[in-house]
Amino acid sequence: MDMSFYKGKRVLLTGHTGFKGSWMSRVLVNAGAILTGYSLNPPTEPNLFSMCDVESRMHSVIGDIRDLDRLKSVFEEAQPEIVIHMAAQPIVRDSYKDPVFTYETNVMGTVNVLECIRLNTCVKSFVNVTTDKVYKNNEWEWGYRENEPLDGYDPYSNSKSCSELVTHSYKSSFFEDGRVAISTSRAGNVIGGGGFANDRIIPDCVRAAGQGKDMIVRNPHSTRPYQHVLEPVMAYLMIAQKQYEDGNYADYYNVGPDDLDCVTTGDIVDMFCEKWGSGMKWINQYDGGPHEANFLKLDCSKLKTTFRWKPRWNVSEALDKVVEWTRVYFDKGDIPAIMDQQIQEYCTKSENLK
Picture 1: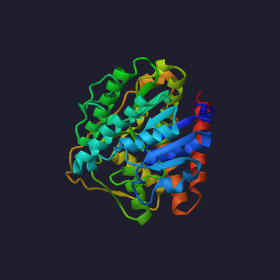
Picture 2 (picture 1 turned 135 degrees about the horizontal axis):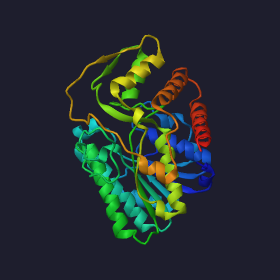
Picture 3 (picture 1 turned 90 degrees about the vertical axis):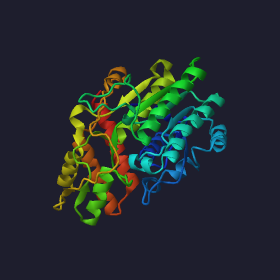
Picture 4 (picture 1 turned 180 degrees about the horizontal axis):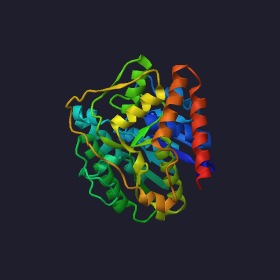
């Protein structure tokens, strides 16, 4: 995609201090966007946001998405043309521990963003980022399409289903005139350099590699649609751009890898161990934890057909990028430089696939 579109555009990104938000922030500031971020402090220590050297090149606001008055003031100051909403409580297991916070953040947070958009005429394009887990999961073998029922099982997944419904209601109730183009985007599991969250398979692998320990896997047979973080980041930006230019593109879109990259947790850990080397291996240690989906993948035909989009890196290539980034990190190397290198490689491959 042509990132020159974003030069000089006023963009508000919620959740900018998270893993995916940090990568998107780097992409946007490199493109010359006038970027405002609104988020809680980075959720982990260490964290990618502190490493990726974007704070001085954007307006970073530390705030709670549940605080409507604070969010209103940020909108009034930033006057964004484009809003991308990624602020969330994103961990399934944490949603069992604190369901109220999860619903407040993921549902009322979405209400607050949409309310600010309703009250500000500056916004032309809004993308709400949800998850592949919004669908009622029947554990079947084919991918979910955008018209399937929304009914996530656990508090995290269900709160994101609710976020979709909130978006649909606001779109129908307040934006039928088309003054704001509104889409939601449902992405699969993302991997990439700089993930440090708990209960995430690749960050767990990285921690084990750094400590020279065997990797503990609690559910090796679950199947997920794994993709490099730049795949959905660039897809969200593409959707935001296209619907900014033509409101007819506003819709609901799955963003996921090809079927061959929907692999089991055991498979992806096998691949990581092989690429990392040093005799790294993993141990199956099922812990009987709370319910999580066993089989889940997306049908991305709509995104591919509408925008002629296709994934750039398969799961093996994505893991190569994770290992490359992680070795730079362990060697105390230049993190912004390796991010920019990978962003450039991704964009170059995108051009070659046209």
